[in-house]
Length: 96
Length: 477
Image (cartoon, rainbow over all chains, first blue to last red):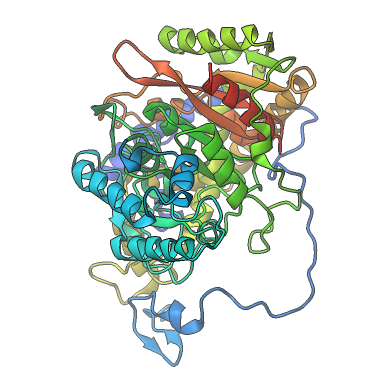
């Protein structure tokens, strides 16, 4: 059941501010979407593995070498609107 | 003939024959864009100076007698989710509205090595989430065949730009049908490659285990030429495979004699418009006359693909978009808070559009404690069964043929307030993404109302060549 309190709870987990109007709208829409998902209960998945990757890749290790990125530190720092101080970005306080 | 209407092959020949210059060809595309883009809204950013500079550089080399790749000097449009160094790349989201990437995506880098002229960036549903381009921060892209209708999505701008001859070819992305469906709605060719065939480096991730990048073009031959340039292993995307890239043009031999074509009956069932089925079957019949062996097959898991997709894709999307917090990526909120967590809430609340918020909510919910097994794990298991379906039928047939979309382009606004109905628009394209197999969308004619209909061929992983053979025969029917 995706009611308004569930929507508010999930929006907290997802760290998104929602307006009261959005909460109302999403609860109705998501209720319908998750109602549709019930179709998967018809499927017998006994013995089926979970697929998270489709081309059979395996983890590999690489040589411990420095590979330069495509953008340097200066170029990356230009991408922020926040104040830059000693090659670092100044953000709001995390711990009070 | 207007230069902007040429295919890559024709443009390449004209440039080498000195019939016209790349600068003239590029200017012809910009003239078309200037005349049509206000009405169609296919491009969201233009790089006139950069494009003309690239064109002149190619002209100079050709004048000097240099041998250049076929794509050199040919104007291209790039979906605005693909990073272009120095040219604004927004993903059509408010949270990235001012972002100028400091580097090129691998696919752009590869096309630049070929001498591409990059005209600009094309419209999409925000972060490629949608089937109509109605979820774009820049407004909807209109269908060149009927401006009351959508161009499809999410690569709606890329498909419309090609269909309206505003460029010679374009590049899009396909996570659940985002190249094939707009290509079919706009009456052009679009190829979704095998997962891992084209590098995703520098393309903003939507759903990492589903995302692919591919060409949209005016001919099958052009699709082969662009694939040749962009396919291959890339150490910046370790999901690309070390599988040799074949000579794609060699598959355009125009012979389907003995080719086994399967018609999955589930793709012709309830909900698929008769006009669509009739146009597709008309072409299939002609392929049979040309020597193909056509038989009905069954992919019983097809009807579960939408549910699998709309559980696992939002799960991956919500994880991928976690970094858009106004600090690491994205704009800061209008009134930034002193508290960091509150700052994140505001940046994301202001920065994401409706559909993105909806999908992040779905993804967060299915990954949350107590629901992970019921939704996410279950969907991953059903995905395995969809893959098995394809493995089984590809033991019987070489390619599958089916409609791309159950219906032609729908009217703007028709589905936008009903997310589930919009999600169902992807029902015939999602299965190929679920299995990571390649598929090509080919125009097969128009409805009585004048809207294009597309047929898709699907093949086993890394068998893009079979698709090109089948599509090239279809093109010449």
